[in-house]
Image 1 (cartoon, rainbow, N blue to C red):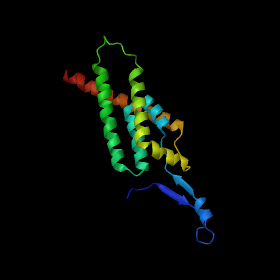
Image 2: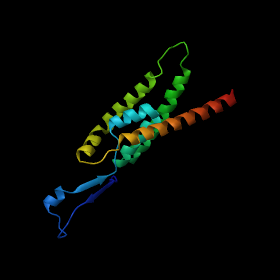
Image 3: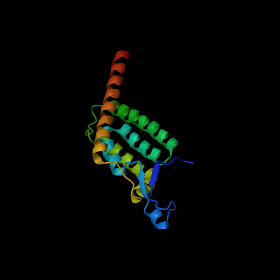
Image 4: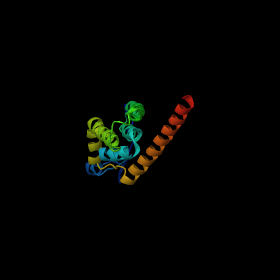
Length: 161
């Protein structure tokens, strides 16, 4: 049975919950990221950031296996995207913004396809979602992590050549 990150607070006067009280229960759940959050955060921080957002949502939904798979796919996508971008010859003139726009829209559509119904149900139940400030901050952290990994990779590659 999947773990659910949910706390139910109710007011009981007699110790027995009436149907009206049950309907008035307040659900405090772990906030999630909406698809638009994931799109912006991915544009700022790259595919590794998309992996973080999507994996977080899967954990909240109680799907730990899918959360782990999201991390694996995000790391693989990061390697493929940045490795491929480094292999593009200089003669081919691709604007710098095309690749980030592509992977942020891909992350958006994958989120909509695999998590859209659960995100919608989560939001419609009155549960919380993270704010845009947190999305931007995590995007910037993802950007820093990506730059550090690329820098280390380039240093290692330079030492072997």
